[in-house]
Structures are given as structure tokens and as C-alpha cells.
Image 1: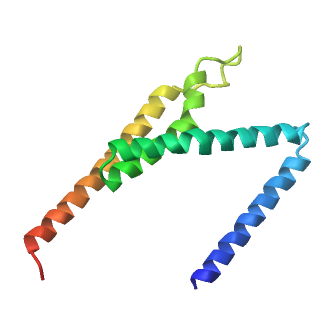
Image 2 (image 1 turned 45 degrees about the vertical axis):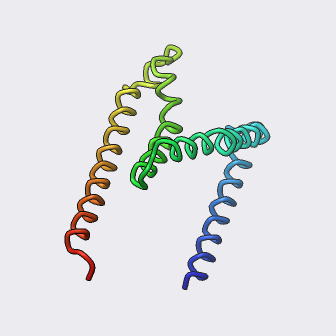
Image 3 (image 1 turned 60 degrees about the horizontal axis):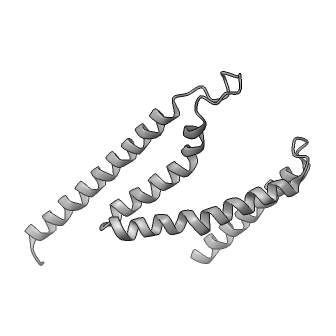
Length: 138
């Protein structure tokens, strides 16, 4: 069953990549697909060469439990996605609809919400451990 699931996932992934490549090569707004390739390679180098090592080092240094480590990974992903909009907020080049939302506030609220969920998870884990210790060995 596991082999069938892996095969189905691989086939679905390859189909999605083929669809994306088809869209890249046939999109009339993309005049030079090589620019997209350079952008993608740059993103890969930034992700694997800088971002992942920093997140791993921060997790190893500051996070002692799996819940905090998971939240650090989520916070890093939110930062990677949200930081460009936060840094460019107010830079609308005369078009007020370009970046109209309060991105810094929304980013901080999202971080706070995910931290609250992680805290609830940590509390649930601590309560479960305490109950097991009180129950004693069976």
C-alpha cells in the first residue's frame, strides 16, 4: 500500500511539474523563460544555502522541544512568504491598489496566532505527560 501511495504521489508531482513547465513555455506574458530559470535557481540557492541552515541552527540552538521547533519552521516559512510584502508596504509607485493592506500588522498577527496554537500544543503535551506520570507504570 505504501509503495502505491509513493508511486501515485510521484506521478501527481511529475504531472504538476509538466503542467507548470507547459504554462511557463506557453504564457504570453513571459518573454524570456531563461529569466524565470535564473530566478528559480536563485530562490533555490537562497533557500538551501541560507534559509534552511539558519532555521536549522536556530532550532538547534534555541528550541528544546518539538513543538517549539515546529513553530520556528512555521515562523520561518511565514517570514519567507510575508517579508517581501512587509518590506514593500507603502511602495505603490502611484498605484494605491498595488499593496493596499497593512502587511506588517497582518504578519505579526499571523505569527502571534501560530505561536498561540504552538503554545496550546505544548500545554497539551505537558498535560498528557503529567497524566501519564501520575498514572504510573502499568
